[in-house]
Image (cartoon, rainbow, N blue to C red):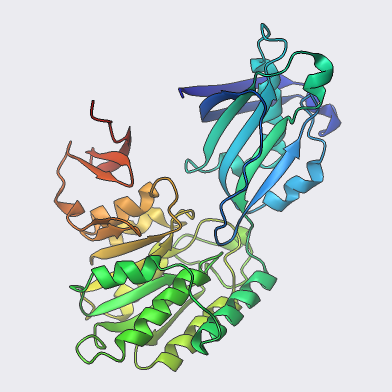
Length: 389
């Protein structure tokens, strides 16, 4: 399977059906994995918290999306993967221009699909067709794996989930956070900073369960001193959010389980995040200012949500140990850099990088099947770990 770069610079009046006969200048860049199949069959999506699949259909030989209204479901959400499926018939034809038009339509329908480097792209050519009538019966269009933007309803449900968990009426089905915390017994005098936006409640639920168990162990119960939870601005409209002053931050002392649960539920019900970026660094700086005796911070973060205030990480002066939740293919570079620049560490369900800060200029390291390098003081992804021959 080879990689290509598709760069669209598309001047057109064809978009007149959507935008009153105006000419449109679009510049899109996306890295595609390419593959060919005789006939595309949509795979049943893996069941994961908050993620779903959406199909946008396009008739054979056309570029207009038939069920355009369904794309509204993607608004404000996180796009994990986009597959563009087409039929290579007639075999000798070049379908690049037609696929460019299809990409342009997707851009207008769901521009947020193009806003994150984390989004994976796949171009699927169907090659088993022998006639136009047969091709017309094949699927053409986009298959999109995504997570819906949070809503008031989802926030209320997550708050109820936390309550059910506290009452023992809910069973934890994912153990990412618990496994990481149990592996990291050397952390002391901690302030735990937790992302309470989007679909993070299963992970925060694990954090709270882990904490309740530690309270019962005399030598462990004093390791966590305080909790800081953030929801990216309560109900503040996205347009009004400002770097470093977004708000929606709540904290409590780790004195007893009820206190922490109440703080958690209050954070969730006060807001649900809105757009994808979150105010992680603002919450860390809040903790740094208020809890001056803390030795280190534990950040429970959503791998799919970038930091709204990434530019402020140089102000964080204590080690940040990042627990990354929802990692499916590769860790978010922003969180790797946060751990690196604060002399902290990065943790996924399977792996720990405890000595990341020791890496010097030009040195490489591996994480989750990917190779990274320190380049000009930043972390860059080199590519997949090379296969030894």
